[in-house]
Image (cartoon, rainbow, N blue to C red; front, side, top):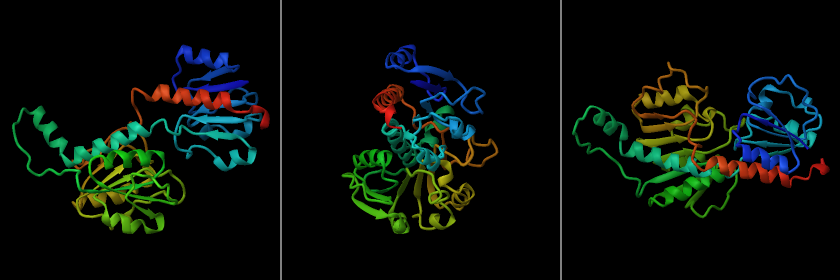
Length: 304
């Protein structure tokens, strides 16, 4: 089997060896963010992230399976893959834990006003802050109750919060106290102290958080986004924050990445910015390779 690997994942020598021992002849391309100059018609399988943003799948005439290193499908022409009968695997279950931990961390940082204490520590200034909040007893809304959303719900529940869920279907998550379908999202937003965005990006979710939906947020609500940047209309969010209506926002993803240095989100004291980094942990690489290996070796290439 001819396997194309890209720099979307950094393989160890032993991992490459294990794939070769499984019967794969490997071609490695470091930079997937460009059109490939080589003949792509020979590949039976590909492991990548954004390769098909820059390369037409039509060139991969023998392609049978694609393993993504991302959980989202928004960089893939999914309908075209389906038409061609190409099996598509995402990184399901790989990033759930670090992303959920990040969401809880940022909620706590906002509630405990970490920026105030970090700044004072740099200045060696001993000053108490009496204007702090606790998670206990608050209401957390998880918008998108998939694998990542369920991990978020599990962790927030451990802090004694009431956890609401909103999605297009009810996953019956044991950590969700009350579920709302997406056509009732406004009702859920009115109840939430903390809103955690875990939705995939598609035509229906792009700019879901906008001037209208923000108007349903409670005063001193907290917004956390670990899904995709385009879920939020950034100018509308910036306006909402400027009106001093939100307690804070923690954003790991943005409409345009890298985030422009001129973007006011960088300097707003109520906003916590990280560079699309919430998925990173010491356990992710091993977890992802195990999934890659399992899916590539268990797939029946003869059926496609």
